Figure 1 (tube, rainbow, N blue to C red):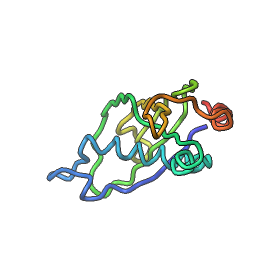
Figure 2 (tube, rainbow, N blue to C red):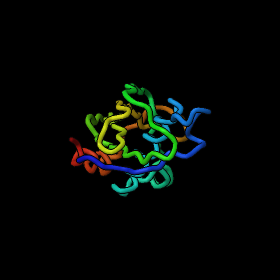
Figure 3 (tube, helix red, strand yellow):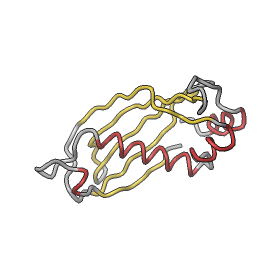
Length: 134
C-alpha cells in the first residue's frame, strides 16, 4: 500500500539559488513516514508512551534525479517493502507533477527508549505493519 504526502518547498528549504538543499529531501521523507505511521494509528508518541519504543533511521540510500525549486509542490510516497522483528525498510519517491525528483530507501530500527538497544516490534504493531507490506 502506497501512502502519499504533499508539501510545498519554502525558502528555508533552498539554497541561495532557490534549489532544494540535498539534505532536505531526508526531512521531506521523514515527514512523510511520520504521517504514514500516524495514518496507521502507530504514531511515534504512542509507541514511546505505551511500549517505550521508537523507530530510528539506521540507513538511507538516495538518488537525486532532478532539482526541486522554491514554491514547487512535491509529493512524497511511502511504501513498506521489508519487515523484520526489529527493523523495516521503506521505499520513498519524491515527485513533482508526476516526475521523479528523488528516490530512496530508508531502513529504520526499533529501539528501546531507555537502553537505546534494538527491541522487537510489539506483536500487534508487527501484525498491523505486515498487513501493509507492498
